[in-house]
Amino acid sequence: MTITIQLSRQSDIVSDLIADFTHAWPSHVDIVCQHTDGLLGARSDVCAGVPAGVQIRPPDYVSFTRTERISFEAPAPIEAAFYAFLDEQVGKPYAKIAIAGLALDRDWRDPNHWFCSELFMAAAEASGLIRKITSPLNFISPRDVLILGETLGTPA
Image (cartoon, rainbow, N blue to C red; front, side, top):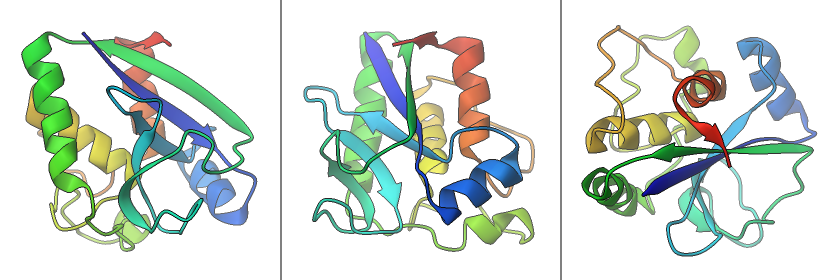
């Protein structure tokens, strides 16, 4: 079974700041939906008429300047748990404080709101796709997901 994510970058000031601050090209992470080509992720803005927060959006919901897809092989129970976790998050708000998490002491696993890369990592931990992160982190960036993908995943 396969779990696929899409790393992306837009041409705007927020994307530029995220990418510049984290010293990597991606500024956003979406999860490719299991049975469609839709993208599930957390965003701070309304895109293609889809509200902000954790939502499923069409694959062309915004004009990206760069995208890369990475797949992770997973046994069926892990894949099922991964998507079940994500289904429970749909409709939750975007974690507006996440960007400031680099300077603030915050819990990136707070289940009440999500930042795009933190949503993926929480699903990966909850499902057993990856081991629980034990280092005291206050922010998970798209760069962190890129590193994980380049280490454990394969280009999709």
